[in-house]
Length: 150
Image 1 (cartoon, rainbow, N blue to C red):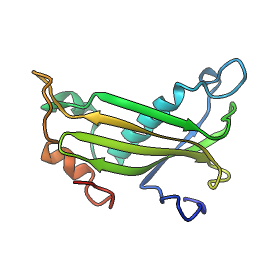
Image 2: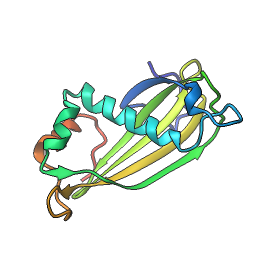
Image 3: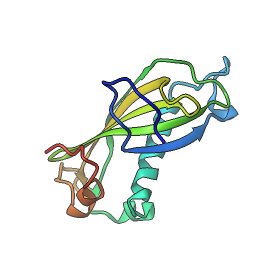
């Protein structure tokens, strides 16, 4: 369950629990910065599964969804063994793109934000790599989240 957030903080569409493992930390015992993107992608994949999508089907789609932009803003340290809720907080499905916004918060104190970030994917044809519109079956995965942009 999502804890109280500041009024300007959006509620989570989806949450994925993650405990920071020893192999994910740097020499200072804190989450190595690049690992946050793995946590975002893992939460995204868990969201797709929660919507009934079999990840093994990704390879069978007529489109690919490569990342074209990633960003993260670190707010608080994430030491070894910290339990995080990696939250999907916004989805924008465009004419050829998918933008996902994330927030990593303390599982014990959900009002404590550790990091925010986003990933931007573009839909491309699997054969010619030209931009494509999202297939209907993919667009339906995001229906009902209340945060779809046209």
